[in-house]
Length: 228
Length: 237
Image 1 (spheres, each protein chain N blue to C red):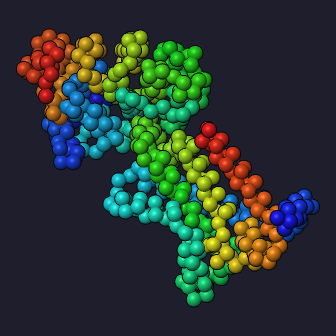
Image 2: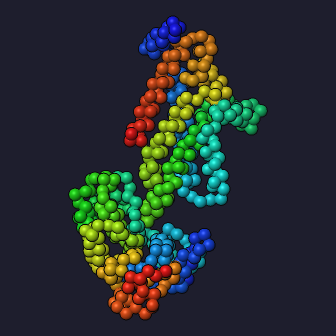
Image 3: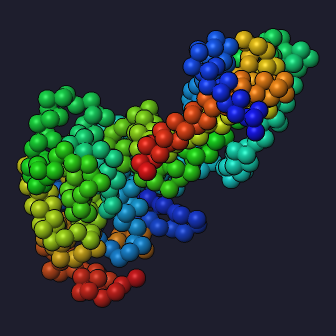
């Protein structure tokens, strides 16, 4: 119990003293997850709209695969990215293993099914009605896409926040492909694992508190978006 | 804009829902399409509106017998339960004009004009979520009329509405058609409403045309036994 209390005291002093290492870890976590969500959004929102509304061969199979991938264990995503980016892998020539780029790729792999799945479910029932209305009013293809995004902004917003939550809390995949290199690929979750293993509980708790506060903020935004 | 329907066949899951050899909608007139549920009226309207493609046949538009793509922006459709965008009444009425690139000052003028005609001027800045069914349908109609289309398609646009909304909508439609010369195709299964509105009428059953003609002749002296039965209120399938 004493350890925990000391850990909390140390954590608060680390946060309020503006410890550079802690803040660089937080900054990297936020930026890597943000970039992952932006890339995933560009891929997943149009994909979710198309899969949710269009009839095409093997659509049911595609939906089943997306639903399965929504629960993809992060370590497996990390393993795939590792195998592809490792020196002997097909994309080894890029030389980006153990870099933030590799972490972003792994996170995108994890988030894309989540945003696609939620968007797809949202547009499935009313999407065609919205599209037909826009079409009869004279909207062009890109205008129709924008109208659909606007009309389903609540669900799409929720999917982005859920994706961000998944990305920032992820540890297995980023540990594998990022390598947890101090000052380069160390993010909040991997730092907590490392500091705990090393017995630096104050640092682990400090980062844990920030992560919890972030989750709290994400939940507030999620509730606002959903109008709760 | 006149419309010609030629050798049209449409099937859903192997069931033929529209099978029309030829049907002609003259320019600048108020046409009413009637028929019981499942007679193919809505599907025919969707084909004319370019929302559904037929298996066989085609629809030609205007004097030059254009295809749909070249006249798309001169046509609009108001559905039975029209979808309104999650924004204000003003933005909804303006939406179609925005997509068609209509100049902002003309846009504003038309929004105000049609909002007044359809008794929506006090609701202009309210979100459509707060409106009643009748008000929502009037917004959908204002949105379509503000486009000043050459061909206006209406699919049971007054079904399940309160009498006050029906009276307003029918009056606005008649006035609009008279002043603009727009061709209107109005789908309904309400015989009384059809009598009030139609200049020419057509009865569809099981996807085929049973009878068509000038309003007076159609309602007063129908040739087909099925038409007489339908107009007389018998359930005809």
